[in-house]
Image 1 (tube, helix red, strand yellow):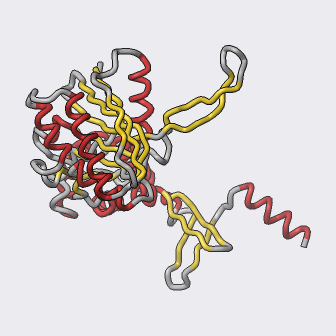
Image 2 (spheres, rainbow, N blue to C red):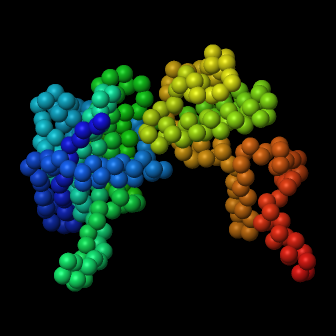
Image 3 (cartoon, rainbow, N blue to C red):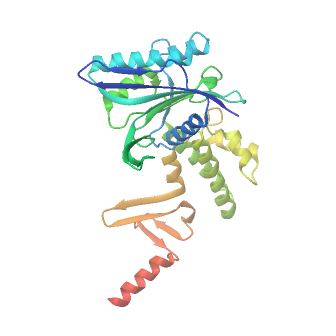
Length: 334
């Protein structure tokens, strides 16, 4: 079972006057609300398509990695780490005349499997209305875990261990390039992984392998690959070829690993952080223009859906019932 710590601060800066900081002087007490909030924030963070992976660029110069090094050396508490970061951020916002009004939630999470994770979530509060115990309408505020939230996750154990994959994940501020640059500067985030390219190379290798299998088995292997990669992406973990080989039914694991290494020599040794959009394109083919939209499962290609590249046409055998009924009604009425 994981244990966690939480401390929250608030910062307001309008870009014209000195920033206003409201800093707690101790971590939150234990309670169910803390764990529930962490779960909601983590879930929102993990589903973001904009989530980036990388590493610290300048560990001794950027504020966050320097503070985390001190924290791991027991020279700083989480309270001190968070307060120092907030003060550095406020100073930079003032110097660059940037605006920000948000709560900053600093978490650490430890599990028995030696995972030690640091999270920083930057969240706004959204206002709504509620009925009080006196049956009066009054304002109500909730933490917005939607599109306005941003933050960073550091796998501290991986950072200080093997560093075999990206130990740093970040969701940047939306639609604010100067704030993105400042946040990356203070957190030390370096966008060092092209997830789309590495995922595409992985899937191309998979496709080369399954082409030698019977159609039914090939489709089963594709489904298993997608399921495995999806689960890894959701948990922010990398895909390894040996690990993938163990979940594919009815294949020779050693042969699979060798053939994947032949397609891409790096793929056997380098874990792959999955790009969800590249994975979705592997599962489905789709395209849209003003008057036409087409989407179908990749497993249907060369089965119910035939593509002729010479004439640039698709032939579909066995239309979905709803579409067929619409066509027949249209033809009957014309």
